[in-house]
Structure formats: C-alpha cells, structure tokens
Length: 340
Image (cartoon, rainbow, N blue to C red; front, side, top):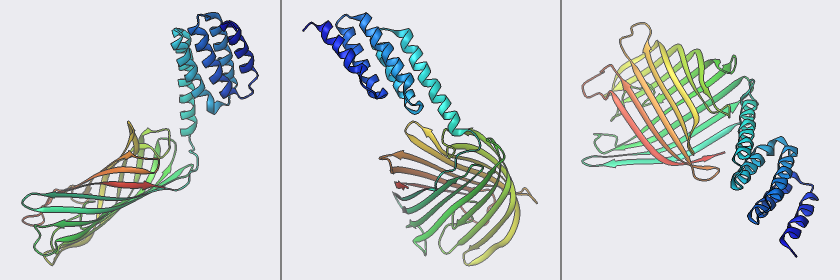
C-alpha cells in the first residue's frame, strides 16, 4: 500500500480516539511521519488537529500539551507556530502560579521534616557534632506557623571537663497576614548552650536564652507555594538570659530588645531549596551590645521524601563577658532529612 494511503488511514484512526491527550500525542507522531515523507500539507493538517485537541483538553493538562505541540512545530521548521504554542504554554503557567498564590492562600495540611546529621574536624584537636533536627510548617488562608528545632551533642577534645556537651537552638514563628505582603508576627527564639543570642558553650558553662518578639513584617518575595517566601521582620519584646560561667552565675535577668529578622523558607535554587534565618538584635535600654544569629539550610532532593541537608549556624555577640570568651561560634552539619 502506498505511503500516502497508509498515512490517510492513520488520520482516520487518530480522529476516532476520544481522549484528547492521547489523540494529541498521536496527531503529533503522525505529523512528524508525514513531514519526513514529504507530505508537508498533510503534516500541517495533522498539527491543526493536534492544536484543537490541546485546546479541548482540561486546563490542568493544557500547559504541557501546548509545549509538546510547540516542539513538534519546531521540528517541522514552523518556528512562528512553535513560538506561539510555547508562549501560550508559558501564559497558562503564569496564570496557574497566580491562582496558587492569590490571597487568601489555600489551607494546607501540616508539613514536617526530621533529620539526622553529623560533622567532624580534627587536627591538633578534634571536634564533632551529632545533630537531630525537626521542622514543621502549617498554612491557613490568613495565618501560618513554622517551628524549627536543632539539637546537637557536641564533642571537643580541647575541653577540660565535659568533652561532650548538649547544644540546642530553635525558633517558632506565627504570622497573621494582613494581605499578601504585610503581616504581624510573634517569634519565639530558644537556645541552650549555643547560638540564638546565647552566651557560652564550653566546659561547665551553662547558658539559656528565651527571646520573644512581636512586630510587623513584609514579604519581599512570594513563591508559587505559599510556604516558599522571603520576608523581613522588625520586632520588640523581652529577652531572658541565664549565664553561668566557671560555676559562677554571670547573668540572670530579663531585658527588652529590638530585633531585625530576615527569613526565607524553601526558596528554589535549581533543584535545591534554601532556607535562612538571620537576626540582629540589641537591648533597647542601652544599645551597647549586639547579638547576631544566622541559620542557613540547603536541602538537595534525593527522592521525593529524602533530602541531603546541609546547615550552617553562626552566633556572634559583641560584649566580652570574660577572658577567652568566644564572640563567634560556628556549627556546620550535613546529613539526611525525611519529609512527611
């Protein structure tokens, strides 16, 4: 049977298929075959049928179908038609993103992560950290809640007494959105023995910090998912600090503080997701001391639920409490995280 007759029978067979997505895929294959055999007019007709199939498909499928149509046009040398199909696909993608991030946001189920990480370094001295982390996020139409806890057992061969030492830090944030950009917030920052505006982290020294902030925030950037954002916050509140150094209580008091906080969560960087908390605080009654805390997390997907997580935590305090005090403390960890 001549090729033209075979291709003609193929058109009749494809036209009889009721499913739009399947029909479009076969129209595209038929158009490419027709083009390769020199039947350019038949190929154009098949592509027109494919376009009608794409336009009749459900909206959720149409974006991908138009993109496939554009690639077929491009392979047949129809650059103008290819550009139109790809542009329509991109327009549908932008419209879908706007629907997803329109305010008020859709209510979502509780999302969580649990991770296990390790880090170590050795030269003249040896240090190591075993880390367990927990992360929770919950989205409502006008509110969201986030909690992140970082608990570690730290080993340091240079210590005189306690070679191993518990370290933990975490924050919880509740936001009430006034609109898509502006919100009010309550932050709770907690630390034991390290970071989050803490005091000391060596030998028998003990430090505990609780900081509560109330204030106003602004979303600098909002992703397609409401839980993907970058925001800046300005707040005031009480800060309780207990510090015991060399078995002597150095501080046990509450101070009012003001803080500027930058937060990002699940910001896409290629295949990875970047989350950041950076806080700079000072007592409002004296302004003679500065506290800086930074927590950077980069999650690389391995599977749908498993991630390779890298975390860098920095703490800086300007005031020197005693000789040998560490103004800057750094913790780096890497490990696996399970998402649920």
